[in-house]
Length: 288
Image (tube, rainbow, N blue to C red; front, top):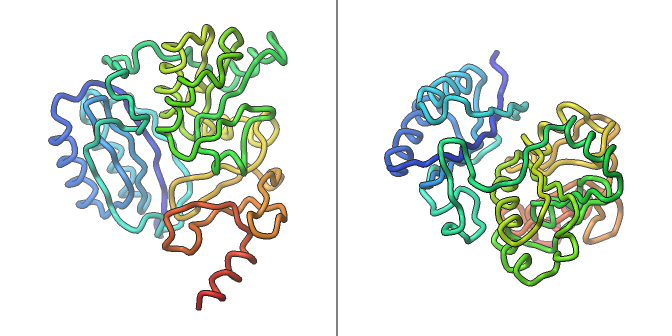
């Protein structure tokens, strides 16, 4: 019996005909019975799809047949088998919605003017050399950071990715402009853009965690600088890197420690909340 798998990937590269890429991706995924979400823009592609192992392997091979996607970094994880309710493939102005498509410039090598890439070992070397002067800057939404983050990280009060630009422009983080800033996010795609936006606004030393929290967790698990659980964009909602993951979140209803994130106020709700299973089930009961 085949094993369900999920792949997470992105590529920043100029795409002259995003609609053609969308139609191709839709046809490939449908032929392989894959579900998930793929966003295509003039700047590249960003996706997470899941299905049976053999089908996902075939999808990755097909994806890499397109020359601009040949070297795509594929992040694999275990799936549940029904991780996505449907397949969505869309063309958007941005593959991550910062609301600043005109600020983003990409070439065949990726984002132009982004932060210096650091692999997990490189992050540790920077911290060893610079100590407490290093700032970890969370490039995700606040809810994601509530259940897991790098120790001592700056967590901006953002409910959506498009909130970052106004917050940066407000001067709220100007005090960090002369310090080494390491941006991080789930798989790395948001930090590709965020680090560029920060550099354009005068942050002098900006890095990005290459491969995101996913790659860091694969290498160090819970024995490094990461603490807690990782929010993911599929039915699993959260993943842990070991059985020893710290529980950082607090239930919004009862205040008890929890790493559970769910759609709120019900499973069809569009808002996410950190809420323990007992309280979530109790709220569901009160609604009948």
